[in-house]
Image 1 (cartoon, rainbow, N blue to C red):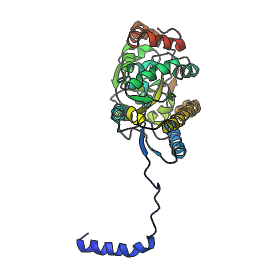
Image 2: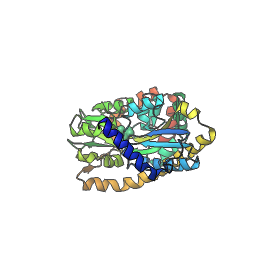
Image 3: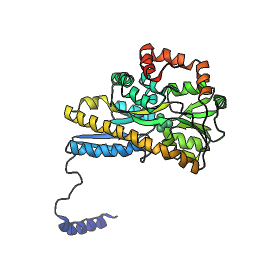
Image 4: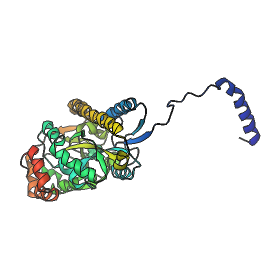
Length: 339
Ligand code: X2X
């Protein structure tokens, strides 16, 4: 646009402006006092995000607009390790992260992922809503992040592959498998004799598609929602560990909020997590059939060979030493004797 054109344009625009001389109605009359960014690594349709959006609206209403939270799902703000740094620096305010990935910062946070620790969900929630979870939250708090009490569920993890079904631990020998960036995950698959590669979830689909790795492991719901069945053929229901997400809030940001706001956030986000657990359970019930219909070949391996391989490799003894006798005893209260 030349200068003259531009002037004409502005004059014309001003001429019509009379029509809309009334004040512009803005969607949000005033900027909220607390504007927060909430990040997750899962696709928008994953129940964590659905419940997060619900909580965000409730928080807005409960605080009469003082808190405005914007959700960034699906790794929009980066991969998990990067989003963890951003949460520590304050660029992200709220972040849902697997305890095992948090392990790089808070070593104890990986403890819930010990292979074959929890027999069923009853034991998972007893532990994580109980003494074990409290111990882990204490450690997270010391690292400058505020964790909410209730974890969001991710689920029991299962191995998928593009090359072969995994029936016993022996099938994992030399198997190129993606694991999340976490010491416990890497050590578990090394103990199986596999070759684990640490890759953030944001890169998993393409790593499988380009065959950088043969397989990966994730709970059923995420395998479906992230469409991993498009790039994986076999699904082995190993259920080798349980994984869940802590909701972490930047510690300084948290400390800077008045108590009434803290209480509303705590209540609404904890409620969202508890509802998400139910959503995920309902979803998981139908996923297996859906994945079969999508062409995955599903097998049900016996857990014994996997447990034996881990024991032989000294996996449990090793991690008992790393986590320490105190936390280990708390875990075994819920898991029974391990190793
Ligand atoms: O990275 C994964 O595999 C995921 C999405 O399950 C976690 O967040 C640990």
